[in-house]
Image (cartoon, rainbow, N blue to C red; front, side, top):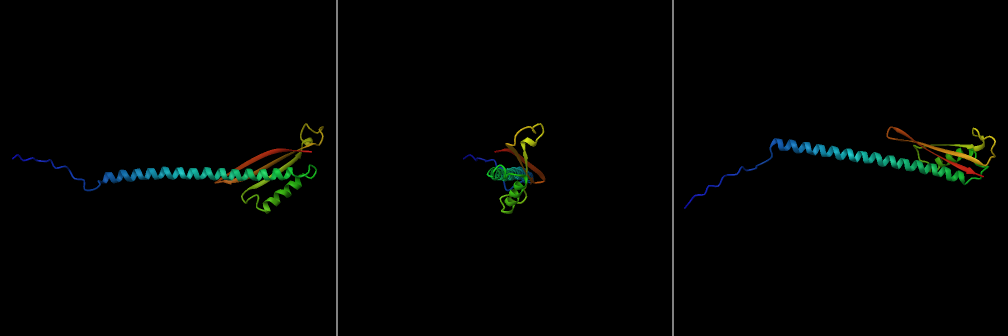
Length: 143
């Protein structure tokens, strides 16, 4: 009978120090990348949400100003409208809404025109992080 010798294979009885160090480094890189992605996603989403709210504030002011009669739409009435929208929380805190209403025939080079058009420019300022953002929309009011 022939004896067969089987070569003894090295047994794995645990992790080496280099295995642990490499796996910890890989986990740290992975967690860092994922955290950065989530943070950037959060910033982008909150900036878009704030922008949408600001746009809605402008639309509210424009629609309610256009609902007024032409002669009733004055700078004072628009400012009163903005104050009432802020009071009933239609314009949330953190948003500064201003409006400028000007007759077209009072603008430069148009003084000879009839009083048929008013220019309404609504501006909203708000902050996203440490930056101040501003949205401006202009529209015309006609008789």
